Image (cartoon, rainbow, N blue to C red):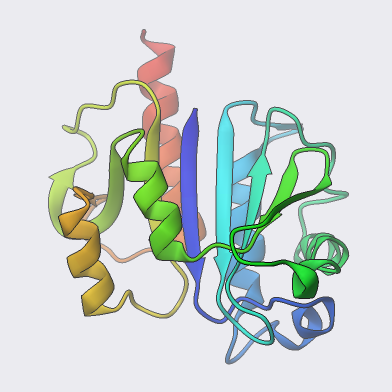
Length: 201
């Protein structure tokens, strides 16, 4: 399985906040585009992806939304409005979650009251975890075996103290090339690299 983690520092945590988060300054569209890039390909849904979106915006952060592509149904579309509708629907119980409580809100879609740091601690104990870093290993020469997790952030850079924690957890730097890309584009690049490797065995 491919695991992707998007840390959305301004990601809304209530249905009412979703509509207000589109565009400047919260940029919900980053989340919407990343959901599509992580889970979908032309005319179908990928069957090998777990996508965690850690929402850290108001009013009840953090809330982690997990999509399991192998068991989820249709999202109703791949445009921003359709993805926003999904988040409005699934975030209805978010305010009632207790710490680390997990709740399956729809088939293949789960809410959890867990922080980004706690999520990465859990993943790093089970598989290699990578974060984008221009000084990291080039993805074209990196070796991936079995399950792997990849960390991305929205339009707000990762804090230095968080980067220090990730380093202590053994998270590895990974470079996708010389240009800084949008999160959704980065997810597509990672998928493409792994797809190409699978195609040649």
